[in-house]
Figure 1 (cartoon, rainbow, N blue to C red):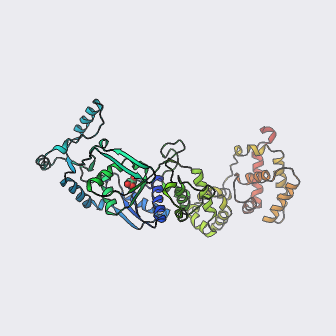
Figure 2 (cartoon, rainbow, N blue to C red; figure 1 turned 135 degrees about the vertical axis):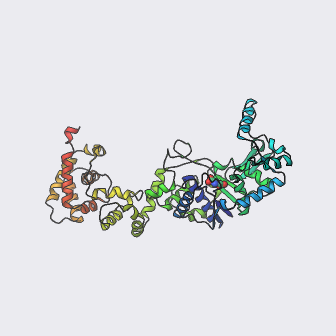
Figure 3 (cartoon, rainbow, N blue to C red; figure 1 turned 30 degrees about the vertical axis):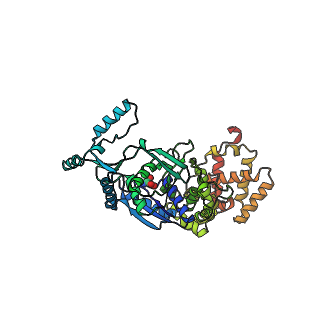
Amino acid sequence: MRLRFAPSPTGSLHVGSARTAIMNQLVSVANNGTLILRIEDTDVSRSTEESTNAILSTLKWLGVSYGEGPFFQSSREKLYSKYIKKLISEGKAYCCFCTQEELEEMRTKQLHKHISTGYDGRCSKLSQEEVAEKISQNLPYVVRLKIPPEKLMFNDLIKGIVEFDGKLLHDIIILRSNGSPTYNLAVVVDDHEMNISHVIRGEDHVSNTPKQIAIYNALGLEAPIFAHIPLIIGADRSKLSKRHCDTAIEDYQKKGFLPEALVNYFSLLGYSHDANNEIMTLENIAKTFSFSSISKSPSMFDLKKLTWMNNQYIRMLSDKELYDKAKSFCKDIPLEEKKIKKILLLSKDQLKVLSDIKEICAPFCSYKIDWDQKKVVKLLKKERILDFLKEFIEKLEILQDFSLNSLEILFDTQLGLDSIKKRDAAQIIRFASTGKLISPPLFDTLYLLGQQEIIIRMNQFLQEVPCQEKMY
Ligand code: GLU
């Protein structure tokens, strides 16, 4: 099996393209195949080197590895022109000199007559002499492929039989007036030359497939097997866009998602699998991979699920791995490295993404605490909750040996004298001393902050928070 991933370098790697790359990798691993990377940069007005580099580095970060390439279409133009010449010499393609105005006039007339719009093939009737004459006058032209008015069909591994009416395609352009081949022509030539056996790509390309089949037919070549993966959509069922979430993989990288989590998530997106066993490496998913398990309908992107998965992967990291991976997110935290490391390891289970470490470290830095009381409205309604806090502070003020152990004993003793729930008691202490409802384990947090600091903070909190009677 020979597969290819063929991004156009017109921006950074998009979620949809990353999923296509990952699916190709998955199928390649499942079948012991070869994955080829091809950069489709024939459209010079939109392709940039910067995008190429961004795509290459994101693929590397994701762990998508290719056995051959990257090949650049921009350096293969001679090859495409050889195929185009062959098609012209066999009378299967022709030069079209129609101007923009002529094409617009043609379209207006077709619309008036209520017939399908598209090129009517008029330049295919030019004699060789007329063509030679126009070329000698330096008139700009494109090359069009003659598409016979027949049915074009392919058997898609996911969608099943797909049929198109050749009559509706009209004679497609295969060479632009600036001399560069169009996407459809270059793809066919390359997929043939590179011996691609399976084309796995997004469903947005399904309308290109009949055009490509028409080119294969004209060249007398066998088309590869196609598998079009249904699109990824947002919660409102429209095509995934920036309105829904970040769409560039780079943004996920910047937030501290782990590549393993993204690969796991996209491998299983739209793939029927055991919901109780979702944390799997690509290699494990590949062991039982089958095209028949890919859903025919679009898949909804679920950021919550991806974030959950990311947390599962963070939990699996060793302490060293976690620190190495999170280091770059800790750069601007004004704490000593040792302390950051300690907080990081203590909060491993709570990190949804690695960049959360900044927020988690915030209460440990000498920032002024902002107690957003909206967060604790319910908690403050609990009976005796502030009395509990006051009594806890009083005992803390006279505590002799401040340690993890003594803190825990103090808390338990105070709790034993009171009727409030352990969870509520812990939350009010956590909130009063950090301004947050989530932190590393409570006693570690208090211990790291230090006895004086937490006393000051908790007293300050009591001064700021209106007394319960006034509040309600
Ligand atoms: N270059 C196309 C894209 O980036 C993909 C072409 C293909 O897979 O056939 O969408």
